[in-house]
Amino acid sequence: MRAVQVVTLDGPRAVRLVDVPEPADDGPAAQDKVEIDVHVAGVTFPEVLLSRGEYQIKPELPFIPGSEVAGTVRRAPEGSGLTPGQRVAAFPGFGGFAEVVTADPSFTFPLPDPVTFEQGAALPMNYLTMHFALTRRGQLHEGESVLVHGAAGGLGTAAVQLAKAYGARVLAVVSTEAKGEVATAAGADDVVLADGFRDRVKELTGGRGVDVVVDPVGGDRFTDSLRSLAVEGRLLVLGFTGGDIPTVRVNRLLLNNVTVMGVGWGAFWSRDPGYVAQQWRDLVPLLERGALDPPLGTIHPLEDAAEAISELDERRAAGKVLLRVRG
Image 1 (cartoon, rainbow, N blue to C red):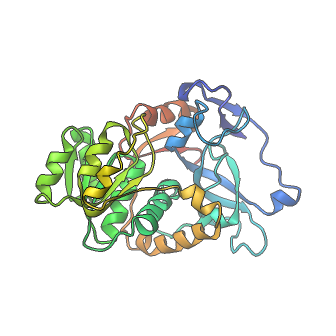
Image 2 (cartoon, rainbow, N blue to C red):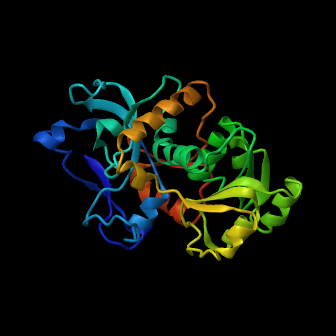
């Protein structure tokens, strides 16, 4: 089968399209997995880090990246509730940039009829992460306000749409006017350019600030994000696409009784794998009524995986970046 491999840790441009054997379908471990014909794969920021050996998980070279896919079931274990030919999204963790991948049944999700393969591949990493961030960590309530950094990217648009679905007002922070259009299309109520966002947020909230900040960017925005919080506000730390990992002067937390909290979706479900299936069940009604509709960016053929990953690395992505594997 065709697959994309990381063969050296020299960055996104160094990935290679290769021919490799399909996943083995014999042995006890294989029999417990769902085998999926991949139609579309989602591209995520961890692929950028993996291509340089900078991710917390460091697989042995060479390896096939790709943590989220959509396709059809080729084979499924008895009792899994999945059947051959069924349309699914899945979170295999690795191996998704290939024509065939295996995934745990607990991380394989039937797609509602209205959801396309392209939309399905955009869901697992970003929407399940943001569901965890907003509902479990952030304890978001209807009527609150949410500030989203990186609001035109895959994770950011997921944050915008989920926060809106839960009845929040959403302020989107973007780096360009063009990315602001993506955030608006995703459902943001207000769009703010990153340069000087703090003053604009204060103006838009009448000086009150926001209840929740969603921050996958980090870097030099962090202090102003803290200053943008309302009394008892919560700042959710999801990553550091800006490069630098900020530090917290904890005396700032006392001023308005604000909270900074980490959002480690993978660290959480690794102790409770059944939680992910519960999350998907929560998302299905929102998908069926169209409240969640992932804004799609560029869709690359599998052989252009290097360019797809580079879009995220160079912060050019507007909407979810995808790889079309077949179909």
